Length: 134
Image (cartoon, helix red, strand yellow):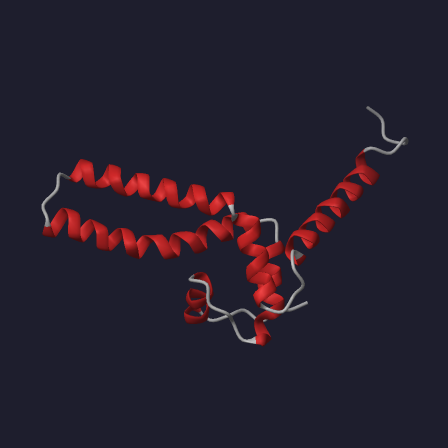
């Protein structure tokens, strides 16, 4: 099955929380349910955080002249805090993103759970049956 992918400008809009046109609905569900969904979520958060960090660096280091080490430690702690809270609420964030694109509440979590269960059953059928030797 081929899924319509958004162009880079649309993806940036999607990364900062925008809604894509309906023709990308399947891609949004794919984005939220592939095995790398958590990595994709972190990447979207970094797209939001990096420009803010760049502005803060310019203000603190270039304009105000703070020590480089202090600026880098502060920015690093900002990245840590931003990603920490983003990861705490990642399932809710991804589920609400999918809901915004027309799917039922918590649909992405249900799909991920079903895919994981199917993978577990496939693994057990292949490797845990009574015919396999140890």
